[in-house]
Picture 1 (tube, helix red, strand yellow):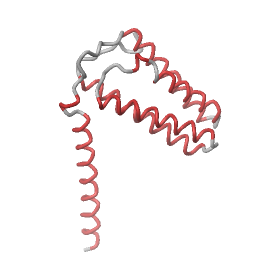
Picture 2 (picture 1 turned 90 degrees about the vertical axis):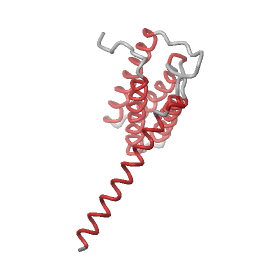
Picture 3 (picture 1 turned 90 degrees about the horizontal axis):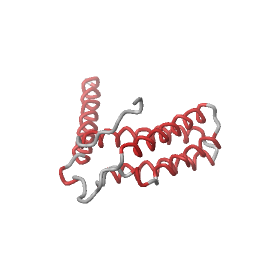
Length: 154
């Protein structure tokens, strides 16, 4: 009997977690989050260059963490924050996009703090959070549907 109870409890937890994820996804794509009027579309070449630099710094950051080079990890994260602050970063003006951008900055600042505190495990966790923010934001921008930029390979 206890196996059934445990099984039901696990299924209930999974369903609650899944429903919460679904609500977050719906909120992220809510119709009220349309692009704000008067926002010019950024130059594709500039955005491609910016995203290429972001990718380069992210790869160097990963390499630094793998090598336990926390000063280098902090420096690469600071470079990511500088890229984030460039005007071309804001390719769309929506509340959700701004939220992901702020999350990116916060995760980067937390990673720098962990690196300066010489806490490799915390720095690795912050790197994962930073990367997840990128995944979420890129998916969000793709879901908007009217924004397409050339791939990095072109």
